[in-house]
Length: 407
Ligand code: SF4
Image (cartoon, rainbow, N blue to C red; front, top):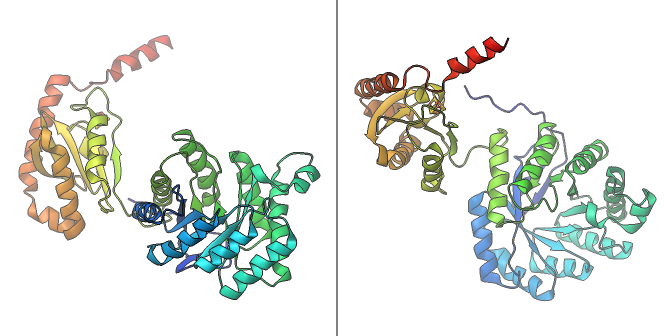
């Protein structure tokens, strides 16, 4: 039985990045950032489309030069998702990005420091109804705050940086804001977001900055973002990986799906870890299945199991699965055997049946199958394997006896 997420989400005000709502109870969104030169319009748009297909709801592009702003003027109208302009040191780039029509700005308070510049940008955003993300970054904290907190980056310093920026915005009566307090240290960012969540009601953008290449980058981001989401904190997320940004978008999406915070969009592939009973190279077949499903948007749980002795039972909750046995593949739908295929056709049959279930539903797929014959064949192969391997293919009993004898 599927257990739905029960995380109580923190109440926040809602903002809109283009047509995407952030905060205020709206679905948690996934963000990523392009790595192309923004001035290269075609390359950037190609990447934006790839990110949107991978699950990104919002994409950020750097706006670090006038050519980038000019690129954004061409990109924004053709983008399938709202665009956020990343502003570094020059407030004039923020104004240029607004002229280009971007849906949101990201400002780093550590980089644009003159109050009059900050307020000019905020006033302009207010007039155009464009939100701003205050993007505090532990690595580029305002020097005054850095020294105030003992030449250290602390959660308190990061929260204060965000609050100072909010105060500048308040002077021009602008509050259409989401906030991030990212750090490359997971414990630091978790604590900074917790403290921030206690003192503001703005939506929060979560991330571990400079998390590095996978798998370490994925682990750090998942722990940092996942911990906060489980506490109800966070309205939009970004994985910052040293990798193709498509991986960032996929990871973000998968995390939300795994936590039951977004509806499943793609296959959830589960596979047994393989053991002494395995009839196939489970890693290899699972990898082939992953490749075969690719970007097909089939939101089902699919299982690849190493043996028909235990596979269909262990994965009985999967929508569709396949278990190897006696050089054949036994397909099962919700734990019921539906067909038998040759071992080399396991992956293609899995995809075919998943597509059938996706379009026609489980009942229709079961109605088409000769479940009695499929179960009989599975039973035959199961018995054959048991006869060949015995009841204890993993030699568990031998180990149990060893343990007992030591006692
Ligand atoms: S018993 Fe079969 S299904 Fe379970 S882990 Fe071993 S090979 Fe995989």
